[in-house]
Figure 1 (spheres, one colour):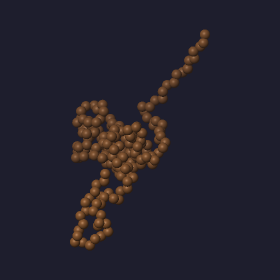
Figure 2 (cartoon, rainbow, N blue to C red):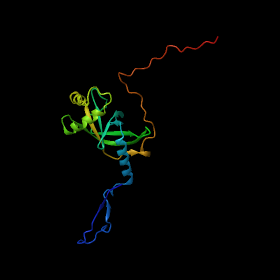
Figure 3 (tube, rainbow, N blue to C red):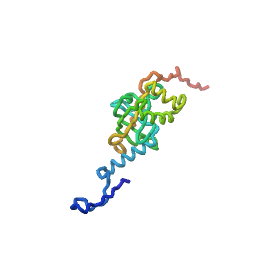
Figure 4 (cartoon, rainbow, N blue to C red):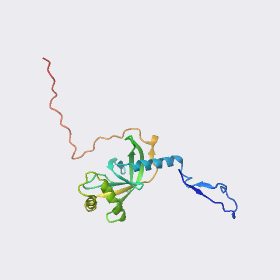
Length: 198
C-alpha cells in the first residue's frame, strides 16, 4: 500500500490545478510495475542465504550472505569464500532465488566495502560472524581475524531497475567448472568387465 498525504487547501490563495483533490500519493511518479519489482527485491532479499554475485563482465559466483536493513552483507578473502573482484568493486549484479529454488530476480547493486574500525564495521561484522557456519572459534574471534587477515566485508544495496518474470533469461546459464587446483578428473576403470555366460 502506498502512503497517502492529506493536503489541506489554503483558502487564502486562489485555487490551483489539483487543489480540489485532497488526497495525493507521495509516490505518484512510480509505476505499478516498478513498485511490484521493488517489493519482489525486498522479499527475496529478506529471505536470502545465498546470492549469485557478478562483477563487471566476470561470471557470477554463488556466495553466502546475510540480509540486513535492505542490503546484503558478504564476506570474502583469506579463509573465507572467494568473490572475484568484489572486494574493490563499486557495482555488481545480484541474482536471488525464490522458494522454489529457481531464480526470481536480478538487480544491480551498489557495493560498499566496510572497513575495520568504522561504525559500520562494528555494527555489521558481528552479525555476519554470528551467521557463519562451522566458524573456527567465537564470533568475536572471527571478526578479529577478518580485520587482521584483510578479509573484505561488503554491503550490496539495490541500485537500479531489477529484472524479473519474463525479463529474466529463459536458459539455465549453467557453466562448466572453472579451472582450479582442487579440481581433479575422476579416474576411469581400466577395463569394464563382462560377465561370461556358461
